[in-house]
Length: 98
Image 1 (cartoon, rainbow, N blue to C red):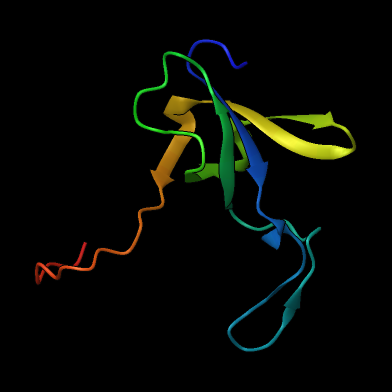
Image 2 (cartoon, one colour):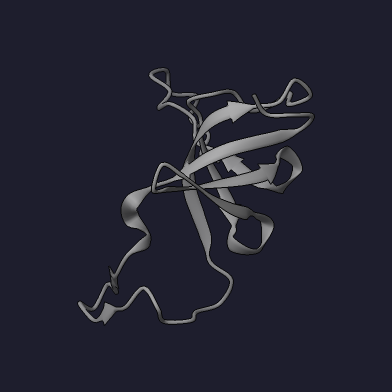
C-alpha cells in the first residue's frame, strides 16, 4: 500500500533504443535534453486526487525514485511530479483541438 500522495509506476518498455524520424538509431544510453517517460500507475496513496490505478502518466526522469521488486523496476513518485495523464480518445468531436 502506498502512503500519502505517492504513486507506484511501472515504466513502459519503450525506454530502450529509439529511432529518429530520419531513421537514425539513438541508443538508450545517449544523453538528450530532459526526457519525459510514460508509465502505468499500479498503486496510489490515499491522498492522491487526480490519478488512479491503471492510468498512463507522463513524468520526468529526475522526479522519481527507482525500486526493484521481484527483479522488475518500478518508480515511486509524488502525484505533483506527474506532468500529464493520458486520456481515452473522445468519441464526440467538439471541434476543439487541445
